[in-house]
Image (cartoon, rainbow, N blue to C red; front, side, top):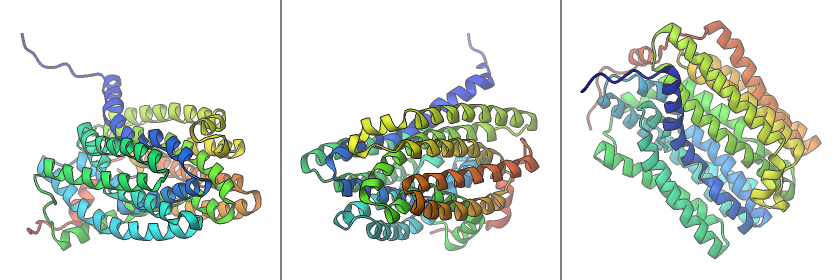
Length: 433
């Protein structure tokens, strides 16, 4: 006997969204958790410092390379009317992102090598490139099309293979440079495999300069939000590298790694909740889902604070070695930063960006970046790496407060104007190759 499939309850739909659409992108990002303890024990203090400086600079470069698609691209893909439109959006994003990623990779490699200990400049450069290549990542698109398989086969699997190979190679050679090289290779090959399998060609259809120029114009504010937000989020380790000794930087880098592991979960949950919130157009339902998203993120914030502020020093020592254990005071302020970034995520992704308040979010992000980086430098020079952590917490808190102020004016169920705005600013016909 056949019949219509029962409509799942909002709670079960949310649970499936969190499990299916956040777990795999999370695994793609969390794979370094498996490798980094091996890298830490196989590396000198200078190499560990250079590795983390490279990742910090590279991650910022990767955010620049995304050109705003990680923020605005997901709702655009989710609200596209057909699969052809979604694939066209991806193709346009790829050419924009690839061009920026090439430049950002080269610049990040140079900057990271200059900040790092001289003996380990190549390690810093390799990991900077690996971080910058995340700009051509696929997770944002996988969330938009509600396809966790994309994240599994083209991000998790290639990076998993690279991680396993890197552990063996590094343990044999005692040279962590190889992990950065293999990680970069996995990102490139995974992206090309996605193109061949899903787009049925190695490179997406060329959309034409006019279309790409229009897309960049439409993405300007979202690009600025992501880039500036990433600037102060990834500044602590490079700033510490400028003002502190390699030993102190190595210890702070361990604290920062634990914090980053936590924010991977925040990003994954934020992506999943964004799709779940935005898929409904009913204002009452949108309001209810936004409240549920705040509740979920509040639980994550509480758990993250406990892990960082209470168990952080112990975890860093166990994972990276007693000689690289993080400072308890730094962990306390990283816990505060974690609460702020967790609670600002649904405000930005589910309310402000869909309502096309990206210009206001950009202004808030710029203010937070200026204040945060300035405090990191000033307090870091005075209090060492603990001062860097204080400045970082201040920047994330400023972002949260600014987003709360903006969201109270927008409301919990704003109209999502991303598609309308984009259509108004884009050419009516795509150019052919």
